[in-house]
Image (cartoon, rainbow, N blue to C red; front, side, top):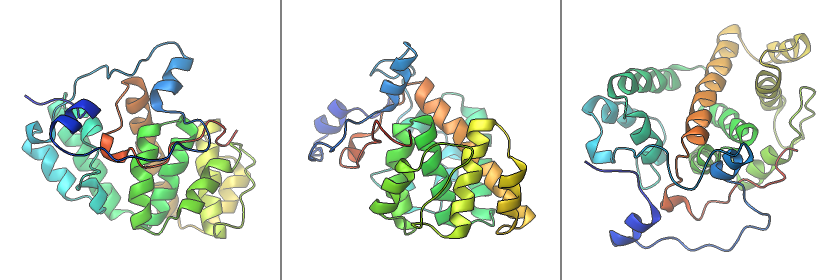
Length: 240
């Protein structure tokens, strides 16, 4: 039975690790975020299944995902392999997650903006690195990723001109839900000017999915795969 992908395994298998310049600001990873609470380390709490050991139902769900980066060398093998330690639940959840992503009225870009902002809120290095890559498939630039980190985390979010009015409203609703666990009347009215009711429900569903993924990654110390070493980390000062 296989296990999570680690740097040592990655190099031992003959694949060269990617070398990058150090980031300009000190990175914060999911383990650092957990260490603040005094509970985590650089070792995963659960040894996940390798991709070739995943149940057929789980692999079938992943094959349906819209982004190539879910399936190529950047595939999120460690978190999927961790969730798959509960195989029946994993298969059902992943089928729901994948199906809902494909059927949502939101664009892939809009979904990725929500997910990247969720990574900033939850200080989830795993979610951040994977979705910087996935987001780039749907037009999210490095500059926009920087901006998503710089916008203050606040229920009165003032968003910059980098994004459209619709996207700014999307970010504000995400901030409201994470910080207040609800949506203020002013944010609801702002978003209602841009989104249909079905779209507002979809936004809430995406946020809810990535509360789950962020907490799984942070709480179980899921390690970022070595293939993502060249993707810039979250900055310590992100969205203060």
